[in-house]
Image (cartoon, rainbow, N blue to C red; front, top):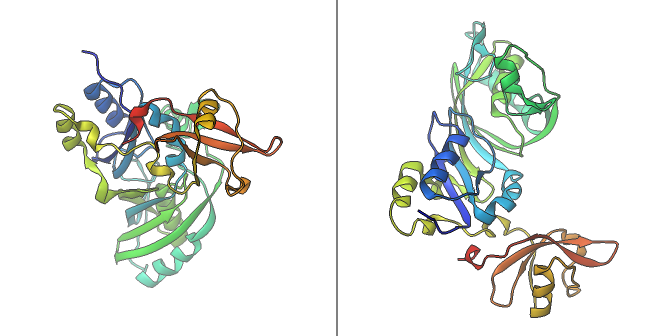
Length: 305
């Protein structure tokens, strides 16, 4: 059976025990859509916000991937694992009885702001063309290079040792598993992540997320597209430009255009809309010509709701 091509973003609440790819495969099969992709991997033990892009929305997935995230994490002191979470092999066990809540709070201070973080050896990061977790599972454990990440907010929800519950606002590329491991190292007793929920990814929140089971049920009926956010939803922070007919035609043909002076070049990428208010492109300023060049062009009118 031939399915109508659909474009938009579905905010899924990923269930525990399922990979992000598993969610994509399931939705791709049920909807019959050819182009489906997620916007940042969640580990199998993690739950929460997983924006899934359909159709032309896959072309703006990086804007979602690069956005800040919020997590609620539960960390357990006294045990270290090779994956830095509860699914890994135990590598070290230590007595944590001498650790106090005050010491935990003090140790957390060093993880706030912009920090250097080493991702886990068991991660989807590629090195020499291969994913690290695949190399690690084959016995080749390579240590990734430290990368700069930003912890915008690190709020203690509870400390009931050996368990610590945190709410974390962070930049893209932050590994909460590494945060748990590093906290354990700093306290000298080891630690690992036992629970993780992503409650926000950019503008997508857990309150707005659809349970996978509900999405599956909706897909078998009519109007499941009503669950989708329009493509420009996660782009709200970018300056908006309304094009005239001539500009619209040029953009649709990949040609650069000149815009009114009230749209500053410093805006970088901007959103472009046609005379009917439909989102049709992302434009990028070319300083050498003083013109705005199409960065992404969307041709289907079905992308706007």
